[in-house]
Length: 288
Ligand code: ATR
Image (tube, rainbow, N blue to C red; front, side, top):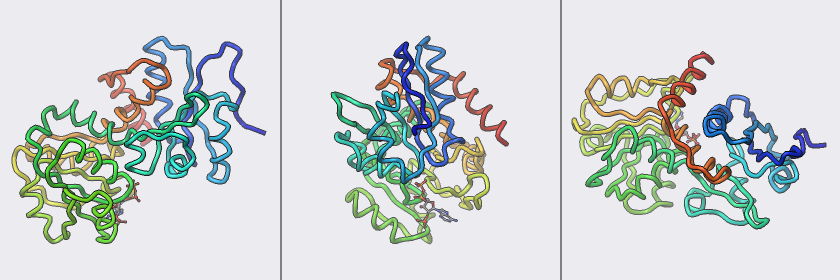
């Protein structure tokens, strides 16, 4: 029997975030803030669904009473495979984080790249003027979204540095020009040419080893972005600020990636405001 309630008689639109585990997700806080501040009678819920149950759950999303969903770890690739229709970003990344139903078809998008770009545009406007070289640390799923985002803004070179060279080589092969793999030993040279540096690894995250790199070679106009948001200010961001560089911290991507889904489900484009940012920051701080 489904653990989820059927749609209420009022027909109030319900959306959920599906993950395993999912209790840590900040999505209910973000979407709940927008629902309340925009006066929309909808709900956004947690749905803890095990991998073995995920396909059945998603195929019966409407029967469970939901008009759409976010998808988080470990389901993003499976969600992509289950969709009848996928938007270009999802096609590129072979992963879906936003689902909705249109004319009876299950549709999927991936909003991670848009979230990354939304954060950079808000916190470092003009960061992509004249394109140039970007340096990406990491070659996992998050790196794919970031490379896609940087490529979409016309960066002329995207340099990848990763612990496991083969993972970076695979990503570079999938994306082609302008992505190039750089040895860790050549990091200082790569930095010297970079106008944007992005950490997509888990290094620097609470409970993980630190990201130990010297930012000295970066040019003074470089922008430093970290997708890690626990802690709110990583050592990388602190070091970049200490050097007087422009910074974009990970919470921006978390908030901005939620915008397209909300707009899709509730037909209003919400804003990432300072008030929302403070709310989510407080929640992260309270979690310790
Ligand atoms: P995500 O989907 O969040 O990107 P992932 O696919 O597991 O997660 O990728 C994690 C990234 O962090 C990878 O680039 C990983 O490097 P490897 O490809 O060598 O595994 C990187 N990473 C994780 N722990 C690391 C560590 N201790 N040192 C260096 N890089 C690390």
